[in-house]
Every structure is written in structure tokens, then in C-alpha cells.
Image 1 (cartoon, helix red, strand yellow):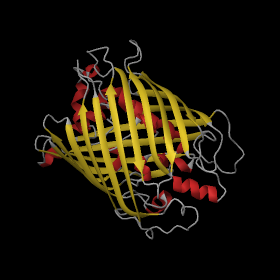
Image 2 (image 1 turned 90 degrees about the vertical axis):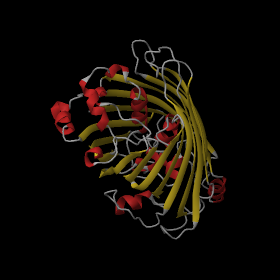
Image 3 (image 1 turned 180 degrees about the vertical axis):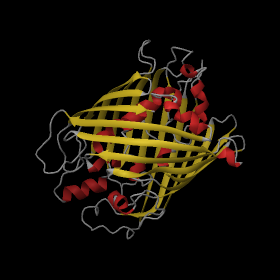
Image 4 (image 1 turned 90 degrees about the horizontal axis):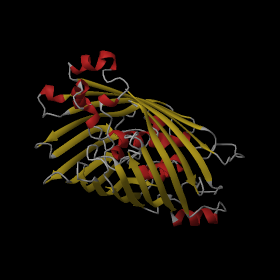
Length: 436
């Protein structure tokens, strides 16, 4: 998987950097930047080489856009935690992740569709030294069309992609938990709308009035409800519409969003519900029954609420700068989700100093609650599961130079594993992201 911290901080630090792009020829390529995701992709003007050696201009003449992202990440528990034959969590040993993600788009307006319509293809290569973080190899990341209607008041997207990337998104408050506890600690992964591979999906966003209020509905094929590795081994391309046991999952999100502007703070509240019709094993049968994808009848569901609010705006010329607060809460079925709920609070600042207008600093605390059904099962089996995990992080993202980001974080977890419990972990995470 793409390093969570790297992408989150990179996108936040650059999503509103319009002022630095003024009067640059490279702005003509912005129309080809992939659309539809929650986390914005940097403008070509903010990449290492805005012209990409002349390739962007040549492709743009034919309606084609190209962007490339390279990311590498290392995580390590500074307290040391050996003594197990196999690695149990990210950072127990030095853990490495890297991603190579080229992105290609085509302007479908050239074929007579509405202006802004776009085809997107993203192949990806991921490397993970710890299999609990994901697999190693090539696959598709996205193959989809983006279609605006009624003066961009209705947006339709369809194809193969990660549904969580257009709804829940990469949340800065999830960094500490996901980096140590793994992606299964996040609601999208637990409820099956996010897996190791993209899934066939359709989502429709409808904006109301001044376009601040919206409703976003989607349906996707669930990731494998029993074993994500099964899907990786049987759908390596990521483009198989059918996987045994994977049935429709539905998502609906309502929200209110105001982007920062001079004298106007950013506000983004969203709340959503997820219902997965696939059959999931109960948490007290996960480790006692063989793999039987498709034979379970327990449905999965979840609810989430997230608020981002800009507290200060010190520079009207760069209105995205300032302190922000992020508050979030997730709840899922205790019957089928080991990580059944969580809460988080994050304070972050974009533009840390006058000389560092695009750096980002963040402080985050969170609590993951473990299913009481699973705890009772683990205790009866003599495993000794924790009832909850407290996480905290402090991080700083440097804009080293145009298109190069260096992110560093200290991550604390009261225990890095659910069962059996292990001593608290204090890990360092460092990542470098290059945008071309």
C-alpha cells in the first residue's frame, strides 16, 4: 500500500498552493490531473519537473496527462521487541515500504462528453517487507471514468478503484494507528470497502445550492471478507470483477465543505454509513475455522464522522495556512470486526514558519476499541487480548524542494498487537515522496 503518512502530508501541504502557480505555463496541465479522489494530487507546477522533460506538452497535445509518484517509508520500534520467530507488526523489525505509481489520464471531452470528463489509469508497484502491510508486486490501482453533469452539480465515477479513496479518504488522524496496528485497524479496511486491490465500483456525488452541501453514494464489490491474501493470490491484476465471497457493499456520505479563502476558514464535516452484504466470520471463529470464503452469513456495517476545521488564518494571501483541528469517530460491528470502534483528535498546522510556508506539523492522539466478543473469546482461549489501544503521534513534513517531501514521525502505541498483548511501542517513521 502507498505509505499513509507520506501521501496524507504531501496532499495537505499542497492542495491549496495556487498562489505559487500563478502565471506559470505548467498550469495548462492541471486539467489532466486525476480527478475524483478525496486526497488531492499535486499540480504539475508543484512537481520536480513541471514539463517532465517535454513529455507533458507532447502528451497534452493529444489530450493525455501523466503524473508519477515515488514513495519510500521505513518504520522501526525504538524500544526493541524481538524474540518472536515471525514479525507480528510493522516496525517490530525495520519495516520498509515503497510505491511506484504512474498516473495516466485522457480528456474524454475530445470524444464529445461533457467538459471535465476524464479516463484514468493507474498501474502500481508496491514493495512491503512485512506482509501485514500489504503485498509486493504489480497490479492496477485504478481504471475508471469520471463524468460531470449539470454544471458539475452531479459527478459520476465508475470503474475499478479503491472506494475508500473517494469517500473516507486518508485521514491524518489514522496515521499512528494504521502505521503500527496495520490497515485492518481502520474502518474502511475492516468493513471491506478497502483491500489490497481495487474493486469494481460506482459512486455518485450530488451537490446542493452553493455546492457546500453534498450527498455521496456508492456501491462497490467487497474485498474478500475472510482473507485479503486470498484475493491477492487469485486476482493479481486487480481487475477481476468477481472474487469468491465478495458481494456488494454500499456507502452513503453526507457532508458540508468550505475551502479556505481570504477571511474564510476551511470547514469540512462528513458523516457516512457502510453496509456490506458479504458474509463475514464472527470474531470468535476467525482463528478456529478453516478458510471458507462465501460460507458465512454475518453482514458487516460501520458508521463514521469526521470534522476538519481551520482555527487560524495568519496570512490572507495564503489562506490555507494556519492551525487546524481534526476530530473523528468510527463504529463498526463488534460481531465481525476485531477493531470495532475508534476516536481520534489531531491538531495540525500548515505553514509552520514564515520561511516554511508549505511545511506541516501535527499532533495526534487516538483510541482503538477492541470488540468485546473477541476479547471474551481470546480470554477463554488463554490468549489475553487487550480491550483497547491508545495511540499518539507527532510528525513534521518538510517541503525539501519542489516536488520532494520528507516526512518524519514518532508514533506511540500502548500495545502494537491485539492478542497476545506486547509492551508499548515507540516507533519512528520516516518517508520520502517524490512527485513528477
